[in-house]
Image 1 (cartoon, rainbow, N blue to C red):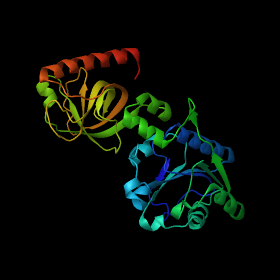
Image 2: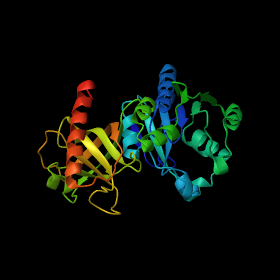
Image 3: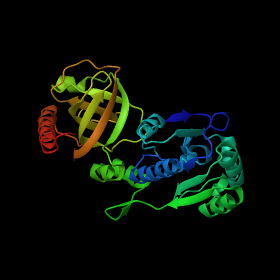
Image 4: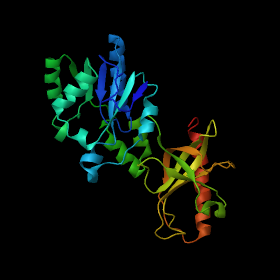
Length: 314
């Protein structure tokens, strides 16, 4: 898959293909189905398959007070698409100037002039152009005039629930990781760098790695069963992760993400790490003493070991 970071100016964009457009935040199972159909259709026609997305999120430009926390970063989106079979991913810089493009200009300048689209496949809630004036009906009508077809791909439902980025975002925030996994088709993960912390865990006898996250979105305060994968190792490590302000020992301290890696004793400071979140064990709470906290951490670790015994391969 080729990635184009300035598709409105680059001259070697693939033309005459099957195109899909959207934010694709989370790359959930609904997004995966859209991409599967686009790739399948393009292969049947012998033409390129192209995904058009935007960065940053359009609302960060047109309504910053309403922009949602992004489920995945742009780098993660590219990674998740790498083996999808797509020919190209076109990332349009969403600038104030671009936000003023009318729906007609979007069709004329992007879909026709730049991409020469043969077919355009979009989700059921797709809108485009300034003021979200562009609809599937407009896309279909203009396509008849300009020589391309427009198709809607209906929502995917999991256990009767319409899969959407909002569903994923709410599930992750609430620690409903089973719901998030069903919607994503994978465990939710957060990437970041291992940062130097206050070494509280080491003083209690449970050293931790502190995550400086690249993601905007991570689960709410609590203790989680997790897997940590470091760039310097070829495998993942079972871990228990705390997200919160550590109320037993600190007052009004910033939220931290810190993981105790089971049976691990390596220096990974400054390493890149990915933390997969599997299960919420408990919510964060204040303990009466450091000893009470220590005893609870031991129980958290035991529950984590039991969880992995019941879920081998994760």
